[in-house]
Amino acid sequence: MKKVFFLIAIVVAMLSSCKNISDATVEDIQKACEKEDWNTTKEMCEAYMKKDRSNPVVYKCLGDAYYGLKDSAFAQYSYDQAIALDSMYVDAMVGSADVLMNGGDASLAISHLRAQMEYIPDNAKLHNALGCAFRLEENDAEAQANFERAVQLDPHYLTARRNLAIMQIDNRDLDDAILNLETALDENPNQADVYNYMALAYAYKSNPEEAEKLFLKSISIDDKYLPAIENLAFHYKHNGNLDKAKKYYEKAAKLGSENAEHILKNSIFKK
Image 1 (cartoon, rainbow, N blue to C red):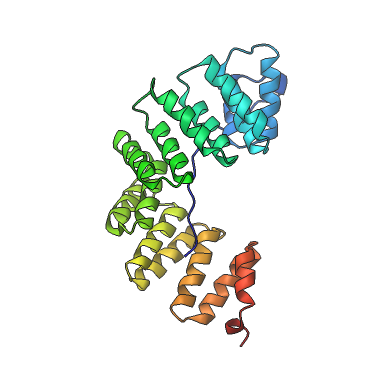
Image 2 (cartoon, rainbow, N blue to C red):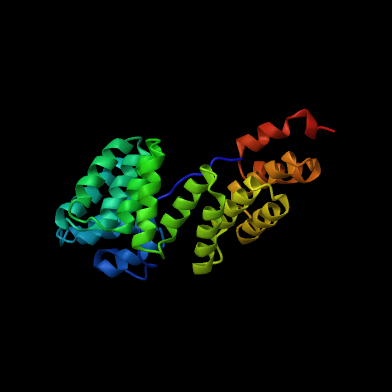
């Protein structure tokens, strides 16, 4: 099966309606950030900071913009400036940790998060971030403990619940994983990734019919969701349905999957 990955959601706000970047308010900046219009967000933040460099929200949004523009160094600096202005700014802490993790420095992320949690011990987002960092360090016990704590602190925090379910799938705690994924779907039924993970759980439970149905449900929600497409192709191949396997590997290849392109060169698909 395809390896599943952990993600940390960086919290942002709503769509920009500001007509003049130089007159952007904090609310305008947050709206552009929600839209993930990173160039506009960056320009708004820079314009705002010419007048006022004391607002941590602006630095945090600037961090999101730089991160979206793949400038990790300036993203890290901006998040750290936001934290310097507001030592309790959890979203900036999570953003900073995410930059470190994606830069391959999970150990430093763990160190920072632990220090921050001495002052903010019961925050679901920080526990989820710490779980992700431990996961990258291959410390599965600490990762799962932090995901569990995050869900305990905030049962509606879907990112942590999904991360916990992924751990449980890896550990073959399949019934618990399915229960967590079903709870996530009760909160929001239109989650392609959740259906994909649930399909994986049923595949490992040797229930291929339910797995197939759930992979297809995932793809029906997002027909470009590559993990589900590749997993369904593997599922069909594993169960001997080569015609359907080829169809979904071809779909994955069209979406840019080098793995699918390689598999399609296998002699079993050249008949």
